[in-house]
Length: 300
Image (tube, rainbow, N blue to C red; front, side, top):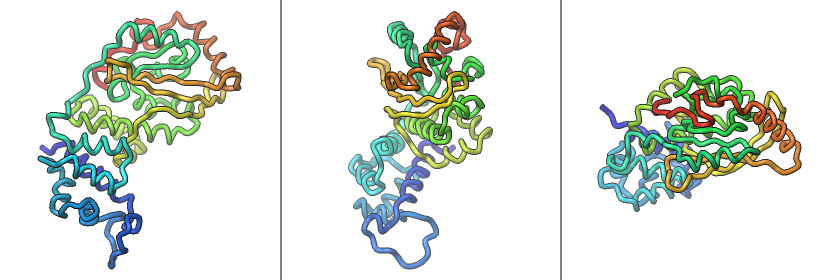
């Protein structure tokens, strides 16, 4: 049986070198017609200072005894950003360093209270594979249609690709969806044998051609902060910032929260939505019988 990490490493390196032309690296244009775009394997080897045979073994997933110096050189030649470089090291690292699945997250009570105290902005906690671990009342009101997913399948990747309301919520749905696929691909680099990941990817690849296409591109992305435009069906258009944090002591979790410019039309719209969320706060936004904690994701 082939190693998923080796297959992913091969595809990742091929897609990265396809982005770079020889002229971009200072190499002369070669004679003849290129069968594929970008750098050839022997050109990457030349620029990285290794033999063509050595680089070919690397691209085929034969990474035993590969050094950090070689990986750094390849990352430099292929102009990998920090997230891509980390992904390369994860894929090429020893098999024992890659786990089958990240630990099932348990939300500590203090973090749950902190989430609930964020009453003025949508906030949620995500676990491995973008599984929804918890959401505050305003977050439940903001992410329309999230509660339509069955308990145990509440996952932000699944939400974006299978819930019609999600496509209507994001003004630039394609950019957001493409980035969340790249986040999932980054997780896959460290957990290639995760059965929950395989189930999620297989299901979405069968359902959605956009997911299939973007997954095959092998892009990786690390979310930190930014802004997005939304069109909420209840309160209309909003532009919100977002921040992502890893809670101390729980590296498998991500706390995501929105921000809003004070006194802006977006702030007014969000305040109106917050009032409505408060009025309905007696409801269970996650469907598992608790106040705001999502069911243990287990599988997605």
